[in-house]
Each structure stands twice: as structure tokens, then as C-alpha cells.
Length: 132
Image (cartoon, rainbow, N blue to C red):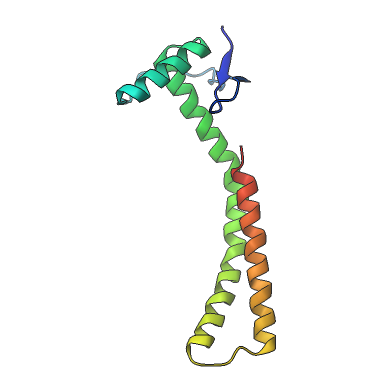
């Protein structure tokens, strides 16, 4: 079987492994219709040719690869989501307090700064997860 490659923008092609298909898998009988404009079709066809694949096979492999990447991120993203809940709650309480005309006391200002720093930290975690 010819090697399968991943294209990363204008960078050189890097090897990519083909997703494993279960041994219990039978003949593929489900079809998905894809539509491309001329430019997209030319790009997909060229990428498939570079990978030594038919365009349909290339699209299937890329779709399954992306799914595997998203699944990999889910546990960490759930953790970040859980961590952001209390931070958002603290920020909302602070804004509500200020909107009622109260002054920003030093203790509240410190809590706000801590909440903002936690938010920045969580956003950095998300950015790291989303980097290729």
C-alpha cells in the first residue's frame, strides 16, 4: 500500500498513518455525497494524487483522522470547561456588584484579578490543546 501523507499548508508533506479498520468491518455500504467548487476539487484531487489515493479514499481518511484528533482533545476540554465555570461565576458576581453602584473594594479587586489570571491560564491551556 502506498504511503499516505498529510499536507500542512505550504509545508512539505509529512507521513501519516492510515486509521485502522476493525477486522469485523465489512464492505462499505454507506455513502456521503460531497460537493466542491472548481478550486476545492482541484486541491483535493491534487492532494489525493500526492498521497497516492483516489479522491474519495483521501477524503474518508482525512475525515477519520480529524475525528480521532477531536476525540483526543475531549477529556482535556471537559476539564477546562469545568474549571471555567466557577471563574465565570466569580466574574459575574463582581460585575453585578459594580453595576449596582458599589465601589471596588481592595479585597474584591484582588478576587477579580485572581479570577482574571485563572481565566488567562485556562485560555492558554485551550490554545495549547488546539495547536497542531
